[in-house]
Image 1: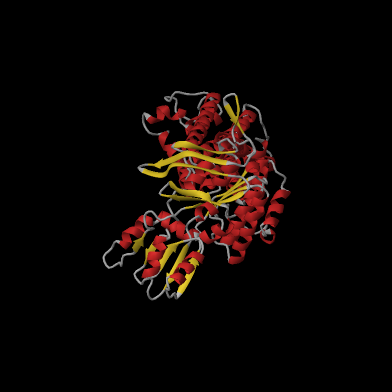
Image 2: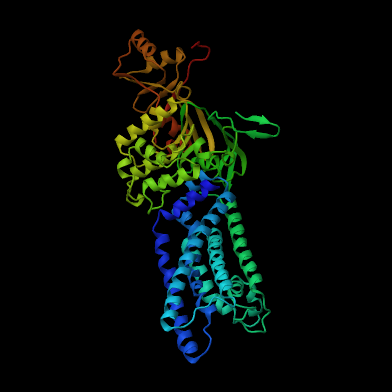
Amino acid sequence: MTDLIRSEVLKVRSTQVWLWMILPAVAFTALGTVGTVYDSIHNDYRHGDQINYYSVFTQFGGAAVALLVIGVLGLTTEFRHKTITPTLLATPDRWKLIIGKSISYLVFAVFYSILCIIVNFAIAISWLNAEGAPVSFGHGVTGGVIKTFLSLVITALFGLGLGALIRNQAAGMVIGIIYFTVLDGLLGNVPKVRLVWPYTPGGAASAFTSKGHNDNIPTDIHQIAPLAGGLIFLAWAVLLVVLGGNVSLRRDIS
Amino acid sequence: MTVATGQRAVEAPTGRIVVDHLTKVFGSQRAVDDLTFTVEPGSVTGFLGPNGAGKTTTLRMLLGLVSPTAGSATINGVAYHSLSRPLQTVGAALEAASFHPAHTGLQHLRIYCAAAGLPARRADEVLDLVGLSNAAKKKTKGYSMGMRQRLGLAGTLLGDPRVLILDEPANGLDPEGIRWLRGFFRHLAGEGRTVLVSSHQLAEVQAVADRAIILNLGRLVRAGTIEELSAGTSTAVVRGPNLGPLQQALAAAGLSGTTEPDGTLRVRADELTQIGHLAFVNNVELHELSLEEFDLERLFFSLTEGAHQAHALNQPGQPPQITFQPNQGDAR
């Protein structure tokens, strides 16, 4: 397994894609952080209100789309460039390959997430200091940072599973991005559908990264705890990986 | 060879490939139909057949990429996916475009070195072996077809395997490359390795292969050593103004053949001495007496397109061939 992970990491590192994907990840983080800090300073701090540190220090969650795309690329690139053939010749056990890829992409997801945390902290702390505003990681902020970090890692796994299931690179990316950026928001507002929304991948991820029991959704929706949201989101990611792996196992590579 | 330990087969490093009643059905199409053959170590075996004969599907089933509908295919007595160190056991190149365009040739090979637990320097070694060292750091999207073939071959050699399976490796190679490939195969077989190579370049296969397996419509139509396949396939070509007496003498001597519309006799024979003697003693004037020796291409087409040719010969306007047979009771 160690050899396989080394091979998969080398496979990603040997292209420029992982470097280029840093740009949107950092850009989303930076934009989100700038917007939130600006809002907190102008609308809260300067009016004597408490800064929403939870919101400020979890803005690196905006990198989720980049992590999703990186995950989707994990298997779809193999099919697009037909490298799946030499890959399976080297690792004929397809479950072993799926597990090896999952671990490798988790490694990359951790790297991206840490990078985005650094960008978020650098912008937020330096700006707050410049404004003379205090910096605090209390009242659940540290937990929020950890949950958002884990959410990003799970998102990469979710993307990998989605790619394994769909195999077509463009379709995988479009479906993943549209779901998390458009469809997820719509589902949360559709009557009746919104009642089960907390259990969808997007709803569960939202619950996981929220400060309290779904403090970002209306109270008529059955609330789920952040930890439960995290577990549900993880379950979705694992389900997609298992389903994708199962589909890959059944398919002929021709 | 399969070595049984209880109920479980384990690898025996013989380099033997065994395909046993292998069948693959895609929808209503039987791509491979009850195919059985073996490939022995220390030989180059040509795997031949027209497009759609089932060659690539068979190779993919052998390598665990396509699951068979029925039957089995083993290397060293076990299925490919059960090999403990696949790249160190089998080197396979199935298509000339299985490279990420943004990877260099060296990066491509190092990725699979890592997967197989091989040192990275092995990638440099095999690039040198196939003459691609100068293009090692060039992205594969800039490779010519011939360079891609060589890179694919380099990939097969990474684990120094005893078995090599190659699908159309000569495609895109220039004459120098084909000559190099021929020597390369002979060198590998000389080291006792098993080389199974599918190809459309029949003259090349005939020049380099010890054995041939010929498929048509998913079925095995002929398999054996080149000597076995060539036995009794040479033809004497006889031309002259009046070959009637010679034809009778040949039939009396137990030789069979055909008379073509222009009067040319084609006689199944491995040498010309007897025909020349019969012409002399029967006072027959000859304008040509030559031997057409075994031609794998001719055998290939006769086996894979025989029905088509027979159909064409029966079309109106096609002059018929006249067959003559040995006289009954004559000893050969």
